[in-house]
Image (cartoon, rainbow, N blue to C red; front, side):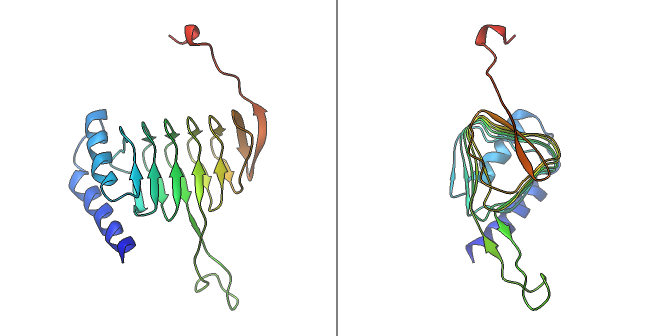
Length: 177
């Protein structure tokens, strides 16, 4: 029942705030409204008007999370760490369908936890499926599909399905303008 209420609440926020511009102050306000029904949410959640949350009750968000336009989150059991960027048109789903009697249509729904590590970046047009883990300070390259729990932090993952490509090195603080 709580999931259904959060779906209706999420839809209500989208409708009521759709006319507001997507500037940081308004996106933080929208994020605050969404956070009221989340399992746990840190500070400074920024959500554009076109983001869709299918359920808020299983979402855990860290501080300073920024969503891109048209991202879709099916939050059955999704944990997003601090300072995460989620690119436009990306999908994060904590649930999956199963096969039953020759069809996926009526197979039971299976939920698995999704974890997006701190400081990570999910680039545009990515899909993160149930049971996946993107480690801390890692990048999921544009158009990739993450289907498993990855282990190596500070890494670049890309492809269909996403695979480890290379270790990332930090840019020194004095180089950042």
